[in-house]
Image 1 (tube, rainbow, N blue to C red):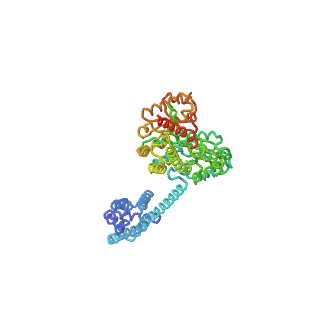
Image 2 (cartoon, rainbow, N blue to C red):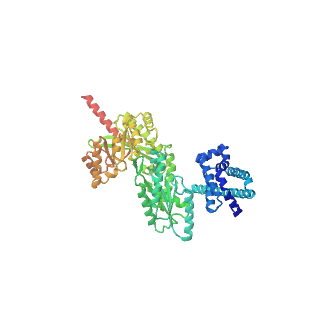
Image 3 (tube, helix red, strand yellow):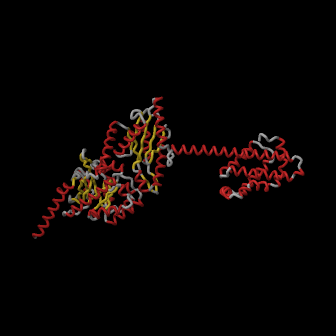
Length: 600
Protein backbone atom coordinates (compact mmCIF):
# COMPACT_ATOMS: atom_id res chain seq x y z
CA UNK A 1 0.00 0.00 0.00
CA UNK A 2 3.09 2.21 0.18
CA UNK A 3 2.85 3.46 -3.45
CA UNK A 4 -0.93 4.00 -3.40
CA UNK A 5 -1.56 7.72 -2.98
CA UNK A 6 -4.71 9.36 -1.65
CA UNK A 7 -5.51 10.42 -5.23
CA UNK A 8 -5.18 6.79 -6.33
CA UNK A 9 -7.61 5.67 -3.62
CA UNK A 10 -10.07 8.42 -4.62
CA UNK A 11 -9.98 7.32 -8.27
CA UNK A 12 -10.47 3.70 -7.15
CA UNK A 13 -13.47 4.65 -5.00
CA UNK A 14 -15.02 6.56 -7.90
CA UNK A 15 -14.65 3.43 -10.06
CA UNK A 16 -16.57 1.30 -7.53
CA UNK A 17 -20.07 1.77 -9.13
CA UNK A 18 -18.69 0.30 -12.36
CA UNK A 19 -17.29 -2.67 -10.46
CA UNK A 20 -20.61 -3.28 -8.70
CA UNK A 21 -22.56 -3.10 -11.98
CA UNK A 22 -20.21 -5.59 -13.73
CA UNK A 23 -19.15 -7.70 -10.74
CA UNK A 24 -20.00 -11.04 -12.39
CA UNK A 25 -17.81 -10.19 -15.39
CA UNK A 26 -14.95 -9.23 -13.10
CA UNK A 27 -15.05 -12.32 -10.86
CA UNK A 28 -15.52 -14.64 -13.84
CA UNK A 29 -12.27 -13.35 -15.33
CA UNK A 30 -10.39 -14.13 -12.11
CA UNK A 31 -11.54 -17.77 -12.00
CA UNK A 32 -11.48 -18.25 -15.76
CA UNK A 33 -8.20 -20.17 -15.62
CA UNK A 34 -9.69 -22.76 -13.20
CA UNK A 35 -12.43 -23.68 -15.61
CA UNK A 36 -9.86 -24.72 -18.23
CA UNK A 37 -7.55 -26.79 -15.98
CA UNK A 38 -9.07 -30.04 -14.67
CA UNK A 39 -6.54 -30.50 -11.87
CA UNK A 40 -7.28 -27.03 -10.45
CA UNK A 41 -10.99 -27.59 -10.80
CA UNK A 42 -10.64 -30.81 -8.78
CA UNK A 43 -8.71 -29.03 -6.05
CA UNK A 44 -11.43 -26.38 -5.74
CA UNK A 45 -14.39 -28.72 -5.85
CA UNK A 46 -12.85 -31.08 -3.30
CA UNK A 47 -13.22 -28.43 -0.58
CA UNK A 48 -15.81 -25.96 -1.91
CA UNK A 49 -17.42 -24.74 -5.17
CA UNK A 50 -16.40 -22.17 -7.78
CA UNK A 51 -19.66 -20.32 -7.12
CA UNK A 52 -18.85 -19.90 -3.44
CA UNK A 53 -15.36 -18.65 -4.25
CA UNK A 54 -16.79 -16.19 -6.77
CA UNK A 55 -19.14 -14.83 -4.14
CA UNK A 56 -16.24 -14.41 -1.68
CA UNK A 57 -14.20 -12.60 -4.34
CA UNK A 58 -17.19 -10.40 -5.28
CA UNK A 59 -17.56 -9.24 -1.70
CA UNK A 60 -13.85 -8.61 -1.43
CA UNK A 61 -13.63 -6.60 -4.69
CA UNK A 62 -16.56 -4.40 -3.77
CA UNK A 63 -14.93 -3.76 -0.41
CA UNK A 64 -11.54 -3.20 -2.07
CA UNK A 65 -12.91 -0.51 -4.40
CA UNK A 66 -14.29 1.46 -1.47
CA UNK A 67 -10.84 3.05 -1.34
CA UNK A 68 -10.26 2.33 2.37
CA UNK A 69 -7.35 -0.11 2.64
CA UNK A 70 -6.35 -0.56 6.29
CA UNK A 71 -4.84 -3.32 8.47
CA UNK A 72 -8.23 -5.07 8.88
CA UNK A 73 -8.62 -5.21 5.09
CA UNK A 74 -5.10 -6.61 4.68
CA UNK A 75 -5.73 -9.22 7.40
CA UNK A 76 -8.89 -10.34 5.65
CA UNK A 77 -7.06 -10.61 2.30
CA UNK A 78 -4.32 -12.68 3.92
CA UNK A 79 -6.88 -15.12 5.29
CA UNK A 80 -8.48 -15.56 1.84
CA UNK A 81 -5.06 -16.22 0.32
CA UNK A 82 -4.17 -18.70 3.08
CA UNK A 83 -7.37 -20.64 2.39
CA UNK A 84 -6.42 -20.90 -1.28
CA UNK A 85 -2.92 -21.97 -0.30
CA UNK A 86 -4.18 -24.53 2.19
CA UNK A 87 -6.44 -26.29 -0.32
CA UNK A 88 -3.52 -26.57 -2.73
CA UNK A 89 -3.91 -23.84 -5.37
CA UNK A 90 -0.38 -23.03 -6.62
CA UNK A 91 1.03 -19.47 -6.73
CA UNK A 92 1.50 -19.69 -10.50
CA UNK A 93 -2.27 -20.05 -10.94
CA UNK A 94 -2.85 -17.16 -8.58
CA UNK A 95 -0.58 -14.86 -10.60
CA UNK A 96 -2.32 -15.86 -13.83
CA UNK A 97 -5.72 -15.14 -12.30
CA UNK A 98 -4.55 -11.69 -11.18
CA UNK A 99 -3.36 -10.96 -14.72
CA UNK A 100 -6.78 -11.99 -16.10
CA UNK A 101 -8.48 -9.76 -13.55
CA UNK A 102 -6.22 -6.80 -14.37
CA UNK A 103 -6.79 -7.25 -18.11
CA UNK A 104 -10.57 -7.21 -17.55
CA UNK A 105 -10.43 -4.08 -15.38
CA UNK A 106 -8.22 -2.26 -17.93
CA UNK A 107 -10.63 -3.30 -20.70
CA UNK A 108 -13.51 -1.83 -18.68
CA UNK A 109 -11.54 1.43 -18.28
CA UNK A 110 -10.84 1.50 -22.00
CA UNK A 111 -14.57 1.07 -22.70
CA UNK A 112 -15.36 4.23 -20.68
CA UNK A 113 -12.52 6.33 -22.14
CA UNK A 114 -14.90 8.78 -23.81
CA UNK A 115 -16.77 9.53 -20.56
CA UNK A 116 -13.90 9.66 -18.04
CA UNK A 117 -11.43 12.53 -17.80
CA UNK A 118 -8.68 10.71 -15.82
CA UNK A 119 -8.34 7.44 -17.70
CA UNK A 120 -4.53 7.25 -17.40
CA UNK A 121 -4.59 8.02 -13.66
CA UNK A 122 -7.32 5.40 -13.09
CA UNK A 123 -5.41 2.80 -15.14
CA UNK A 124 -2.27 3.46 -13.07
CA UNK A 125 -4.17 3.39 -9.74
CA UNK A 126 -5.86 0.03 -10.50
CA UNK A 127 -2.56 -1.46 -11.71
CA UNK A 128 -0.97 -0.42 -8.39
CA UNK A 129 -3.93 -1.88 -6.48
CA UNK A 130 -3.69 -5.25 -8.22
CA UNK A 131 0.10 -5.33 -7.71
CA UNK A 132 -0.45 -4.67 -4.01
CA UNK A 133 -2.99 -7.54 -3.89
CA UNK A 134 -0.50 -9.92 -5.50
CA UNK A 135 2.16 -8.87 -3.00
CA UNK A 136 -0.19 -9.69 -0.07
CA UNK A 137 -1.01 -13.08 -1.58
CA UNK A 138 2.63 -14.02 -2.17
CA UNK A 139 3.53 -13.03 1.40
CA UNK A 140 0.65 -15.10 2.72
CA UNK A 141 1.85 -18.10 0.70
CA UNK A 142 5.43 -17.69 1.88
CA UNK A 143 4.38 -17.29 5.52
CA UNK A 144 2.14 -20.35 5.33
CA UNK A 145 4.89 -22.39 3.69
CA UNK A 146 7.36 -21.36 6.40
CA UNK A 147 4.79 -22.25 9.07
CA UNK A 148 4.12 -25.64 7.51
CA UNK A 149 7.84 -26.32 7.23
CA UNK A 150 8.29 -25.45 10.89
CA UNK A 151 5.35 -27.65 11.85
CA UNK A 152 6.67 -30.55 9.75
CA UNK A 153 10.09 -30.16 11.32
CA UNK A 154 8.56 -30.09 14.80
CA UNK A 155 6.50 -33.21 14.02
CA UNK A 156 9.55 -35.06 12.71
CA UNK A 157 11.57 -34.08 15.79
CA UNK A 158 8.71 -35.12 18.10
CA UNK A 159 8.29 -38.49 16.37
CA UNK A 160 12.03 -39.10 16.60
CA UNK A 161 11.88 -38.64 20.37
CA UNK A 162 8.50 -40.13 21.31
CA UNK A 163 6.78 -43.50 21.25
CA UNK A 164 4.07 -43.51 18.60
CA UNK A 165 1.65 -45.69 20.57
CA UNK A 166 1.69 -44.04 24.00
CA UNK A 167 3.11 -40.59 23.31
CA UNK A 168 5.75 -41.14 25.98
CA UNK A 169 9.43 -40.38 25.37
CA UNK A 170 11.18 -43.23 23.55
CA UNK A 171 14.53 -44.89 24.15
CA UNK A 172 16.44 -42.14 22.33
CA UNK A 173 14.91 -39.33 24.41
CA UNK A 174 15.27 -41.35 27.61
CA UNK A 175 18.99 -41.83 27.02
CA UNK A 176 19.37 -38.09 26.49
CA UNK A 177 17.45 -37.38 29.71
CA UNK A 178 19.59 -39.91 31.59
CA UNK A 179 22.79 -38.33 30.28
CA UNK A 180 21.52 -34.89 31.32
CA UNK A 181 20.64 -36.19 34.80
CA UNK A 182 24.20 -37.46 35.24
CA UNK A 183 25.60 -34.09 34.14
CA UNK A 184 23.24 -32.31 36.55
CA UNK A 185 24.46 -34.50 39.42
CA UNK A 186 28.07 -33.59 38.69
CA UNK A 187 27.17 -29.93 39.08
CA UNK A 188 24.71 -30.14 41.99
CA UNK A 189 25.47 -33.53 43.66
CA UNK A 190 21.78 -34.50 43.72
CA UNK A 191 21.13 -38.28 43.47
CA UNK A 192 18.43 -39.62 41.19
CA UNK A 193 16.77 -43.01 40.69
CA UNK A 194 16.32 -45.08 37.53
CA UNK A 195 13.33 -47.43 37.34
CA UNK A 196 12.93 -50.33 34.92
CA UNK A 197 9.38 -51.69 34.88
CA UNK A 198 8.06 -54.76 33.08
CA UNK A 199 4.40 -55.77 32.90
CA UNK A 200 3.95 -59.35 34.09
CA UNK A 201 1.65 -61.49 31.90
CA UNK A 202 1.43 -58.91 29.09
CA UNK A 203 2.39 -61.55 26.53
CA UNK A 204 -0.60 -63.60 27.59
CA UNK A 205 -2.93 -60.67 26.79
CA UNK A 206 -1.20 -60.06 23.45
CA UNK A 207 -1.34 -63.74 22.50
CA UNK A 208 -4.95 -64.32 23.54
CA UNK A 209 -6.57 -61.03 22.43
CA UNK A 210 -4.30 -59.88 19.62
CA UNK A 211 -2.14 -56.80 19.06
CA UNK A 212 -5.05 -54.34 18.79
CA UNK A 213 -6.15 -55.02 22.37
CA UNK A 214 -2.51 -55.33 23.40
CA UNK A 215 -1.95 -51.76 22.16
CA UNK A 216 -5.03 -50.48 24.01
CA UNK A 217 -3.76 -52.17 27.15
CA UNK A 218 -0.33 -50.52 26.86
CA UNK A 219 -1.97 -47.12 26.37
CA UNK A 220 -3.97 -47.62 29.55
CA UNK A 221 -0.83 -48.70 31.41
CA UNK A 222 0.99 -45.54 30.27
CA UNK A 223 -1.95 -43.40 31.44
CA UNK A 224 -1.82 -45.03 34.88
CA UNK A 225 1.93 -44.42 35.13
CA UNK A 226 1.40 -40.74 34.22
CA UNK A 227 -1.24 -40.44 36.92
CA UNK A 228 1.00 -42.07 39.54
CA UNK A 229 3.90 -39.74 38.76
CA UNK A 230 1.93 -36.50 39.11
CA UNK A 231 3.71 -34.34 41.68
CA UNK A 232 7.06 -36.10 41.19
CA UNK A 233 9.95 -34.75 39.11
CA UNK A 234 10.12 -37.64 36.65
CA UNK A 235 10.83 -38.54 33.05
CA UNK A 236 8.77 -41.51 31.83
CA UNK A 237 9.68 -43.51 28.73
CA UNK A 238 8.57 -46.61 26.89
CA UNK A 239 11.58 -48.50 25.58
CA UNK A 240 9.49 -50.97 23.61
CA UNK A 241 7.01 -53.81 24.17
CA UNK A 242 5.84 -53.73 27.78
CA UNK A 243 9.05 -52.21 29.17
CA UNK A 244 8.83 -48.76 30.75
CA UNK A 245 11.59 -46.71 32.37
CA UNK A 246 11.59 -43.69 34.67
CA UNK A 247 14.08 -41.18 36.00
CA UNK A 248 13.14 -39.80 39.41
CA UNK A 249 15.06 -36.58 40.04
CA UNK A 250 16.16 -35.21 43.42
CA UNK A 251 16.00 -38.65 45.04
CA UNK A 252 17.95 -37.78 48.18
CA UNK A 253 15.94 -40.36 50.15
CA UNK A 254 15.42 -43.90 48.71
CA UNK A 255 12.06 -43.92 50.49
CA UNK A 256 10.80 -41.50 47.82
CA UNK A 257 11.63 -44.02 45.07
CA UNK A 258 10.05 -46.80 47.10
CA UNK A 259 6.86 -44.76 47.56
CA UNK A 260 6.55 -44.08 43.82
CA UNK A 261 7.26 -47.71 42.89
CA UNK A 262 4.67 -48.94 45.38
CA UNK A 263 2.06 -46.55 43.94
CA UNK A 264 2.73 -47.81 40.42
CA UNK A 265 2.55 -51.47 41.41
CA UNK A 266 -0.85 -50.88 43.03
CA UNK A 267 -2.14 -48.90 40.05
CA UNK A 268 -1.07 -51.51 37.49
CA UNK A 269 -2.77 -54.41 39.29
CA UNK A 270 -6.24 -52.83 39.10
CA UNK A 271 -8.18 -54.92 36.49
CA UNK A 272 -8.36 -53.82 32.85
CA UNK A 273 -11.62 -53.94 30.89
CA UNK A 274 -10.92 -55.63 27.54
CA UNK A 275 -13.55 -57.39 25.42
CA UNK A 276 -16.08 -57.04 28.26
CA UNK A 277 -13.85 -59.04 30.63
CA UNK A 278 -11.63 -58.08 33.54
CA UNK A 279 -7.94 -58.79 32.91
CA UNK A 280 -5.41 -58.77 35.71
CA UNK A 281 -1.68 -58.13 35.38
CA UNK A 282 1.07 -56.98 37.69
CA UNK A 283 4.27 -54.95 37.47
CA UNK A 284 7.84 -55.86 38.36
CA UNK A 285 10.04 -52.82 39.04
CA UNK A 286 13.79 -52.66 39.55
CA UNK A 287 15.43 -49.51 40.94
CA UNK A 288 19.01 -48.26 40.73
CA UNK A 289 20.23 -45.09 42.51
CA UNK A 290 22.89 -42.83 40.98
CA UNK A 291 25.77 -42.89 41.81
CA UNK A 292 25.49 -45.70 44.37
CA UNK A 293 24.37 -48.33 41.83
CA UNK A 294 26.18 -47.07 38.75
CA UNK A 295 28.05 -44.06 37.43
CA UNK A 296 27.04 -44.20 33.78
CA UNK A 297 23.91 -44.85 31.70
CA UNK A 298 24.77 -48.45 30.87
CA UNK A 299 25.47 -49.50 34.47
CA UNK A 300 22.33 -47.85 35.83
CA UNK A 301 20.02 -49.47 33.30
CA UNK A 302 21.69 -52.87 33.63
CA UNK A 303 21.49 -52.82 37.41
CA UNK A 304 17.88 -51.61 37.49
CA UNK A 305 17.09 -54.38 35.00
CA UNK A 306 18.82 -56.93 37.23
CA UNK A 307 16.72 -55.82 40.21
CA UNK A 308 13.57 -56.07 38.09
CA UNK A 309 14.35 -59.68 37.13
CA UNK A 310 14.89 -60.51 40.78
CA UNK A 311 11.35 -59.28 41.48
CA UNK A 312 10.06 -61.56 38.71
CA UNK A 313 11.96 -64.51 40.13
CA UNK A 314 10.47 -63.96 43.58
CA UNK A 315 6.85 -63.93 42.46
CA UNK A 316 6.53 -60.68 40.50
CA UNK A 317 4.16 -57.82 41.44
CA UNK A 318 6.61 -55.73 43.43
CA UNK A 319 9.76 -53.63 43.41
CA UNK A 320 13.35 -54.00 44.55
CA UNK A 321 16.55 -51.97 44.74
CA UNK A 322 19.72 -53.23 43.11
CA UNK A 323 22.42 -54.83 45.28
CA UNK A 324 25.79 -56.50 44.69
CA UNK A 325 24.22 -59.87 45.47
CA UNK A 326 21.82 -59.39 42.56
CA UNK A 327 24.77 -58.75 40.26
CA UNK A 328 26.09 -62.21 41.08
CA UNK A 329 22.63 -63.67 40.43
CA UNK A 330 22.52 -61.98 37.03
CA UNK A 331 25.82 -63.52 35.99
CA UNK A 332 24.49 -66.93 37.05
CA UNK A 333 21.28 -66.35 35.09
CA UNK A 334 23.20 -65.43 31.93
CA UNK A 335 25.27 -68.58 32.28
CA UNK A 336 22.20 -70.76 32.85
CA UNK A 337 20.37 -69.24 29.87
CA UNK A 338 23.26 -70.08 27.58
CA UNK A 339 23.42 -73.66 28.89
CA UNK A 340 19.63 -74.11 28.82
CA UNK A 341 19.57 -73.47 25.06
CA UNK A 342 21.62 -76.64 24.64
CA UNK A 343 19.97 -78.78 27.33
CA UNK A 344 17.27 -80.41 25.15
CA UNK A 345 19.69 -81.33 22.36
CA UNK A 346 22.17 -82.74 24.86
CA UNK A 347 19.47 -84.87 26.58
CA UNK A 348 20.12 -83.17 29.91
CA UNK A 349 16.43 -82.92 30.84
CA UNK A 350 14.85 -85.62 32.98
CA UNK A 351 11.32 -86.31 34.16
CA UNK A 352 10.49 -87.05 37.77
CA UNK A 353 7.06 -88.41 38.68
CA UNK A 354 5.12 -87.68 41.85
CA UNK A 355 2.42 -90.24 42.69
CA UNK A 356 -1.17 -89.10 43.17
CA UNK A 357 -2.89 -91.15 45.86
CA UNK A 358 -6.51 -92.05 46.64
CA UNK A 359 -7.16 -91.32 50.31
CA UNK A 360 -9.41 -94.26 51.09
CA UNK A 361 -7.36 -97.10 49.64
CA UNK A 362 -3.98 -95.33 49.51
CA UNK A 363 -3.64 -96.69 45.99
CA UNK A 364 -1.91 -94.74 43.24
CA UNK A 365 -4.42 -93.21 40.80
CA UNK A 366 -2.03 -91.15 38.69
CA UNK A 367 1.35 -89.43 38.50
CA UNK A 368 2.39 -85.87 37.75
CA UNK A 369 5.38 -85.46 35.44
CA UNK A 370 7.84 -82.82 36.67
CA UNK A 371 10.85 -81.75 34.61
CA UNK A 372 14.34 -81.54 36.06
CA UNK A 373 17.61 -80.39 34.48
CA UNK A 374 20.76 -82.36 35.13
CA UNK A 375 23.27 -79.61 34.52
CA UNK A 376 26.73 -80.96 33.56
CA UNK A 377 28.44 -78.80 36.23
CA UNK A 378 25.77 -77.76 38.73
CA UNK A 379 24.00 -81.10 39.13
CA UNK A 380 20.23 -81.60 39.27
CA UNK A 381 18.31 -78.31 39.04
CA UNK A 382 14.65 -77.90 40.00
CA UNK A 383 12.09 -76.15 37.73
CA UNK A 384 12.09 -73.05 39.95
CA UNK A 385 15.67 -72.35 38.82
CA UNK A 386 15.30 -72.65 35.05
CA UNK A 387 11.60 -72.49 34.09
CA UNK A 388 11.39 -68.67 34.63
CA UNK A 389 14.39 -68.32 32.31
CA UNK A 390 12.73 -70.62 29.79
CA UNK A 391 9.53 -68.54 29.88
CA UNK A 392 11.36 -65.24 29.40
CA UNK A 393 13.50 -66.53 26.52
CA UNK A 394 10.83 -68.55 24.69
CA UNK A 395 12.59 -71.86 25.37
CA UNK A 396 9.54 -73.00 27.33
CA UNK A 397 7.87 -74.29 24.15
CA UNK A 398 10.69 -76.72 23.33
CA UNK A 399 10.98 -77.82 26.97
CA UNK A 400 7.20 -78.22 27.25
CA UNK A 401 7.06 -80.30 24.06
CA UNK A 402 9.87 -82.57 25.22
CA UNK A 403 8.17 -83.00 28.63
CA UNK A 404 4.84 -83.91 27.05
CA UNK A 405 6.41 -86.43 24.63
CA UNK A 406 8.55 -88.09 27.27
CA UNK A 407 5.71 -88.31 29.82
CA UNK A 408 3.38 -89.95 27.29
CA UNK A 409 6.11 -92.31 26.10
CA UNK A 410 6.96 -93.39 29.66
CA UNK A 411 3.33 -93.91 30.66
CA UNK A 412 2.68 -96.02 27.56
CA UNK A 413 5.74 -98.11 28.42
CA UNK A 414 4.41 -98.66 31.94
CA UNK A 415 1.00 -99.66 30.59
CA UNK A 416 2.55 -102.19 28.23
CA UNK A 417 4.59 -103.62 31.09
CA UNK A 418 1.45 -104.49 33.00
CA UNK A 419 0.01 -101.34 34.41
CA UNK A 420 -1.58 -100.01 36.40
CA UNK A 421 -3.68 -98.17 33.79
CA UNK A 422 -3.44 -94.70 35.34
CA UNK A 423 -3.07 -91.27 33.69
CA UNK A 424 -0.03 -89.01 33.62
CA UNK A 425 -0.54 -85.35 34.44
CA UNK A 426 1.55 -82.78 32.53
CA UNK A 427 1.68 -79.00 32.98
CA UNK A 428 0.90 -77.14 29.76
CA UNK A 429 2.71 -73.82 29.26
CA UNK A 430 0.84 -70.74 28.11
CA UNK A 431 2.81 -70.79 24.84
CA UNK A 432 1.69 -74.37 24.16
CA UNK A 433 -1.93 -73.69 25.14
CA UNK A 434 -2.30 -70.67 22.85
CA UNK A 435 -0.78 -72.19 19.73
CA UNK A 436 -3.25 -72.31 16.84
CA UNK A 437 -3.07 -76.08 16.32
CA UNK A 438 -3.10 -77.28 19.94
CA UNK A 439 -5.42 -80.28 19.42
CA UNK A 440 -3.43 -81.51 16.42
CA UNK A 441 -0.24 -80.96 18.42
CA UNK A 442 -1.56 -83.17 21.26
CA UNK A 443 -2.99 -85.72 18.85
CA UNK A 444 0.35 -86.06 17.08
CA UNK A 445 2.24 -86.62 20.34
CA UNK A 446 -0.24 -89.28 21.47
CA UNK A 447 -0.03 -91.05 18.10
CA UNK A 448 3.77 -90.99 18.22
CA UNK A 449 3.90 -92.46 21.72
CA UNK A 450 0.87 -94.74 21.44
CA UNK A 451 -0.74 -93.45 24.65
CA UNK A 452 -4.55 -93.36 24.61
CA UNK A 453 -6.07 -89.87 25.15
CA UNK A 454 -7.90 -90.77 28.38
CA UNK A 455 -4.56 -91.43 30.08
CA UNK A 456 -3.27 -87.89 29.51
CA UNK A 457 -4.28 -85.12 31.90
CA UNK A 458 -3.24 -81.58 30.98
CA UNK A 459 -2.78 -79.12 33.81
CA UNK A 460 -3.55 -75.51 32.90
CA UNK A 461 -3.73 -72.35 35.02
CA UNK A 462 -6.56 -69.86 35.42
CA UNK A 463 -4.59 -67.14 33.65
CA UNK A 464 -4.65 -69.15 30.41
CA UNK A 465 -8.43 -68.83 30.29
CA UNK A 466 -8.68 -65.04 30.39
CA UNK A 467 -10.18 -64.93 26.90
CA UNK A 468 -13.22 -67.11 27.48
CA UNK A 469 -14.24 -67.27 23.79
CA UNK A 470 -10.88 -68.72 22.71
CA UNK A 471 -10.36 -70.95 25.75
CA UNK A 472 -13.82 -72.53 25.56
CA UNK A 473 -13.24 -73.77 22.02
CA UNK A 474 -9.75 -75.12 22.79
CA UNK A 475 -10.89 -76.99 25.91
CA UNK A 476 -14.01 -78.31 24.19
CA UNK A 477 -11.93 -79.84 21.38
CA UNK A 478 -9.50 -81.43 23.85
CA UNK A 479 -12.40 -82.82 25.89
CA UNK A 480 -14.06 -84.31 22.82
CA UNK A 481 -10.76 -85.88 21.84
CA UNK A 482 -10.69 -87.62 25.24
CA UNK A 483 -7.94 -85.69 27.02
CA UNK A 484 -8.71 -84.65 30.60
CA UNK A 485 -8.23 -81.08 31.85
CA UNK A 486 -7.05 -80.19 35.33
CA UNK A 487 -7.10 -76.62 36.68
CA UNK A 488 -3.78 -76.13 38.49
CA UNK A 489 -3.17 -73.77 41.46
CA UNK A 490 -6.92 -73.26 41.85
CA UNK A 491 -7.85 -70.33 44.06
CA UNK A 492 -4.67 -68.32 43.49
CA UNK A 493 -5.64 -66.68 40.17
CA UNK A 494 -8.12 -64.02 39.18
CA UNK A 495 -10.53 -65.90 36.99
CA UNK A 496 -14.27 -65.69 37.51
CA UNK A 497 -15.89 -68.73 39.06
CA UNK A 498 -18.35 -68.65 36.18
CA UNK A 499 -15.55 -70.15 34.06
CA UNK A 500 -15.98 -73.43 35.91
CA UNK A 501 -19.42 -73.99 34.44
CA UNK A 502 -18.34 -72.81 30.96
CA UNK A 503 -15.29 -75.01 30.54
CA UNK A 504 -15.11 -78.82 30.37
CA UNK A 505 -12.76 -79.08 33.35
CA UNK A 506 -12.28 -82.54 34.81
CA UNK A 507 -10.40 -81.76 38.01
CA UNK A 508 -9.52 -78.88 40.36
CA UNK A 509 -6.10 -78.86 42.01
CA UNK A 510 -5.97 -77.08 45.37
CA UNK A 511 -2.78 -75.02 45.58
CA UNK A 512 -0.21 -75.94 48.23
CA UNK A 513 -0.36 -72.37 49.61
CA UNK A 514 -3.74 -73.26 51.15
CA UNK A 515 -2.46 -76.58 52.50
CA UNK A 516 0.70 -75.57 54.37
CA UNK A 517 -1.14 -73.93 57.32
CA UNK A 518 -4.40 -75.81 57.04
CA UNK A 519 -4.14 -77.37 60.51
CA UNK A 520 -4.02 -73.98 62.25
CA UNK A 521 -5.36 -71.36 59.84
CA UNK A 522 -9.15 -71.09 59.91
CA UNK A 523 -9.26 -69.10 56.65
CA UNK A 524 -7.32 -71.77 54.77
CA UNK A 525 -9.59 -74.44 56.26
CA UNK A 526 -12.68 -72.58 55.05
CA UNK A 527 -11.24 -72.03 51.57
CA UNK A 528 -10.22 -75.66 51.12
CA UNK A 529 -13.53 -77.01 52.44
CA UNK A 530 -15.40 -74.66 50.07
CA UNK A 531 -13.34 -75.73 47.05
CA UNK A 532 -13.94 -79.41 47.81
CA UNK A 533 -17.69 -78.87 48.27
CA UNK A 534 -17.95 -76.75 45.12
CA UNK A 535 -16.09 -79.31 43.03
CA UNK A 536 -18.34 -82.09 44.28
CA UNK A 537 -21.49 -80.12 43.35
CA UNK A 538 -20.05 -79.38 39.90
CA UNK A 539 -19.29 -83.10 39.39
CA UNK A 540 -15.55 -82.42 39.27
CA UNK A 541 -12.74 -84.32 40.89
CA UNK A 542 -10.51 -82.42 43.30
CA UNK A 543 -6.92 -83.10 44.31
CA UNK A 544 -4.84 -81.36 46.97
CA UNK A 545 -1.08 -80.94 46.49
CA UNK A 546 1.69 -80.27 48.96
CA UNK A 547 0.56 -82.76 51.64
CA UNK A 548 3.44 -83.18 54.10
CA UNK A 549 1.87 -84.09 57.48
CA UNK A 550 -0.71 -86.48 58.84
CA UNK A 551 -2.66 -83.52 60.23
CA UNK A 552 -3.09 -82.08 56.74
CA UNK A 553 -4.14 -85.50 55.44
CA UNK A 554 -6.69 -85.97 58.25
CA UNK A 555 -8.33 -82.60 57.57
CA UNK A 556 -8.64 -83.34 53.86
CA UNK A 557 -10.10 -86.79 54.47
CA UNK A 558 -12.59 -85.36 56.97
CA UNK A 559 -13.74 -82.98 54.23
CA UNK A 560 -14.08 -85.73 51.62
CA UNK A 561 -11.01 -84.88 49.52
CA UNK A 562 -10.35 -88.23 47.84
CA UNK A 563 -7.14 -87.45 45.94
CA UNK A 564 -3.88 -86.09 47.33
CA UNK A 565 -0.30 -85.51 46.29
CA UNK A 566 2.73 -84.60 48.37
CA UNK A 567 5.83 -85.59 50.29
CA UNK A 568 3.75 -87.32 52.98
CA UNK A 569 3.39 -90.23 50.53
CA UNK A 570 6.23 -89.67 48.12
CA UNK A 571 8.56 -87.03 46.79
CA UNK A 572 8.91 -86.78 42.97
CA UNK A 573 10.93 -89.79 41.80
CA UNK A 574 12.81 -90.69 38.62
CA UNK A 575 11.07 -93.24 36.41
CA UNK A 576 13.14 -96.23 37.60
CA UNK A 577 12.33 -95.51 41.26
CA UNK A 578 8.61 -95.15 40.51
CA UNK A 579 8.84 -98.48 38.73
CA UNK A 580 10.57 -100.17 41.67
CA UNK A 581 8.53 -98.63 44.47
CA UNK A 582 5.03 -98.66 42.97
CA UNK A 583 4.60 -100.51 39.69
CA UNK A 584 6.65 -103.67 40.33
CA UNK A 585 4.80 -104.40 43.65
CA UNK A 586 1.50 -103.72 41.87
CA UNK A 587 2.29 -106.23 39.13
CA UNK A 588 3.54 -108.77 41.66
CA UNK A 589 0.27 -108.43 43.57
CA UNK A 590 -1.76 -108.73 40.37
CA UNK A 591 0.18 -111.82 39.35
CA UNK A 592 -0.28 -113.41 42.80
CA UNK A 593 -3.99 -112.71 42.63
CA UNK A 594 -4.20 -114.22 39.16
CA UNK A 595 -2.35 -117.35 40.31
CA UNK A 596 -4.70 -117.65 43.27
CA UNK A 597 -7.72 -117.51 40.99
CA UNK A 598 -6.20 -120.15 38.73
CA UNK A 599 -5.64 -122.49 41.67
CA UNK A 600 -9.25 -122.21 42.64
